[in-house]
Length: 244
Image 1 (tube, one colour):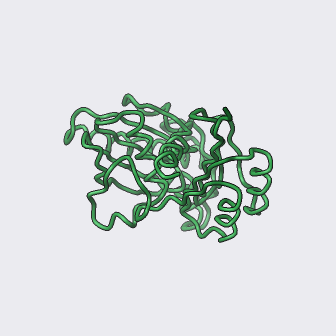
Image 2 (tube, helix red, strand yellow):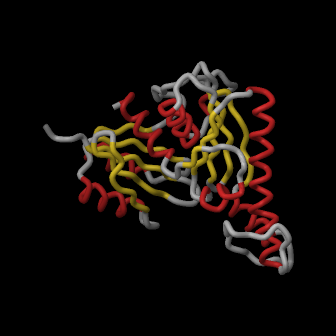
C-alpha cells in the first residue's frame, strides 16, 4: 500500500517554506525562491504529494492555490472554515492568523488537555495560550528580533543593521554588541517575563518555543521549554488530517 505524501506549506512574512510528510513522518524541508509559482511547481514534480495544506499570512498569488488543487487534495487553512483540534472562544476568531492556528494545533497534538504556551519566533513574536480544555484563549504579539534590529536602523541616523547572535555579552563593548545585547537579551527577558506572569495565573503549563530565531534565544532562557523549529509543520499536518 502506497504511503500518503503530504506537502505542508508555510508562507510567512519573511520566508516561505514547505515540508514533505510521508505518512506521519516529516522527511524534507524546502525554501521557496522569489518566484513562488515556479518553486511550487518544482516541488510538486519532485515530491509528488497526494495532499496539501497552505498556511499563508501574505497576499500570495491565486495561481498557488490553483496548482495545489490541480495536483493534490488541497486545504487552505483559515480560522473561519477549517476544522481544528481546539476551539477558539475569543473575540473575532476569524481574524486569527493561520500560523497561530497551526502552532496551537501542534501543542494540542503533543500535549492534549494540558495548559500550553506556544511562543512563535518569526517576523513577529506570538504568544499563544491553549488551556486544559483545548481552548485557544489568545495571547500577545510583539516585534520579532529582526524587526527590532531594522527599527533601530530605520529610526536613527547612525545605528547600523546588525545580525543577531546567540553568544552576546550582557555589557556590550561597541555599537554592534550593544545592539545585540539590547535586542537579543531584551527579547529573552521579555519572554521570561511573560512566562513568569503566565505562571502566576495558570501555574502548571508547558512552554513550546519555535521559529527561526529559536537558536538565538533558547540559550538565554532559564525556564523549562520544549524547543522545536518545525512545530508549525507538525500542526499543519495535524490540521490537514482533519480536513483532507
